[in-house]
Image 1 (cartoon, rainbow, N blue to C red):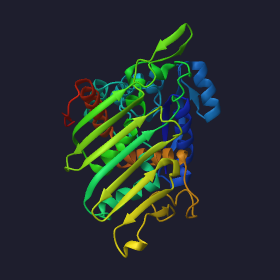
Image 2: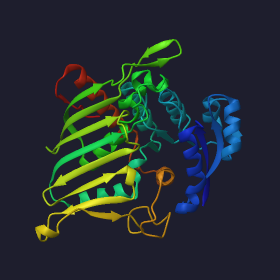
Image 3: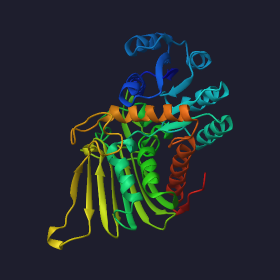
Image 4: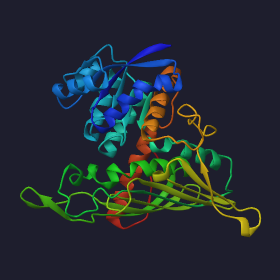
Length: 371
């Protein structure tokens, strides 16, 4: 086993998740590379010192530049706001250090292009954080589709629906300002990544992107919401299959509605992240009277489950998805081989988001450019 020094930029919600993941991944997966929590950076050195003590890092950095320059940091994990991603990633690659970056890749398509170019020019391992697609259930679905378990695919429907801004009386905050922080910038990358993983590339789309609550209470009276609350996208995949995607942060009653339904000539599959340890599989076989969806509970025979638990149906959770990501990043560093999803996969998501905005503005079907 070999130790590797981890530098983490950001100590908030996702920063804590990554700190816990790198503390646990060696024990969970018996990785040959064993992370050492070396340096953490945050919005200030004082904040970094608080996080370093709480999470077990050896040192708090003055800023992210200090972290990237530290010779004890051998790999950089970015869990800071998306507006900071590009500068940190470019500096880390220039310093010869692999990078794991939380989604979305950057605050704009230009950021995503520049970060992908920097990653590929460096030849260093790079990954983007799409954790939900790593559940044992969705990994199992990918296997089922690859095996042709439901025949030829005829239809896809996906969603990512939450309700954290469904109440119009909630005050304005950073989430209601700037396009990058809207529903398409914040939530949409997750189901788009999942859709591309399950169905392959999108040939063309037609999108409608809207703000549900035009104003919200502000400190000096009503404040205009300057980004989107929900969106729907009609899709034509490169395979010719039709599909639909709905994304919302105002979907009353939905907490983690990362869900999809796939129809095929021999069956169908349903999944909902609010029940993340179950896959619903329908097979069009046997007597009609006995047909129906079967609820399959994940267990040790499903991908990446056994490392966490030996009991079928006991389930894995959100933090476990981040630990699987950490394992994958360490594997990419150890082997020198790309592990999906790389920065280029993140660029494909950013390109689809940008095309959706262009379609919504024009009211037209648009081809999705290759990346």
